Length: 219
Image 1 (spheres, rainbow, N blue to C red):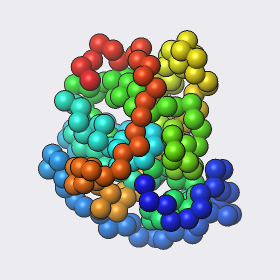
Image 2: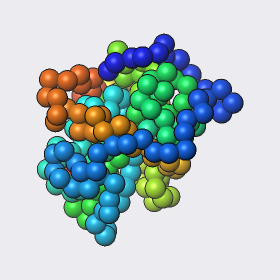
Image 3: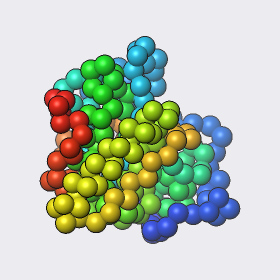
Image 4: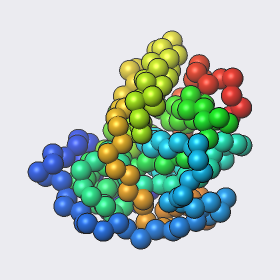
């Protein structure tokens, strides 16, 4: 992805973080691929989880391409300090935010374990503040949950995948699991970017190791 500032590999303190703004950034209202409302209302029975697994242009596509159980996806920023940050500010490393994907899913059709199977298999969660050649705090592996049940499921899947990775010679998982404080929708041109720009940059790459939880679900 385009970089506008020199990235820092460590999180900024609240005192050092950029101030941001009080008003949300303008973004699109409708999902470019499936036509569903990006900001809701979402159907009764759906749940939301926010996932960071590298450059959000490619990672969002991993979830909208799932064959069923996904109502809508959107890209944005989470896990940091600065309110309503811009893309350039996030890329500076001075907001503390991660590039993330909001996934609105139907757990009756695609349980959270299956969503997290896609999450873990689509990146290398052992790399810390990077994914491949993309280096910076915004590329860290993270799961930002809406409730305690999601957090417990995420911890169980992380532990199971960690064991599978160790068996294949990988290091410790660095995926952070935290309650979602705020999700800020990214600017409109980022939403479903690779559907609008099929030849655009995609830095997504997994480890090739199968996640042992969620294997009974079509993915």
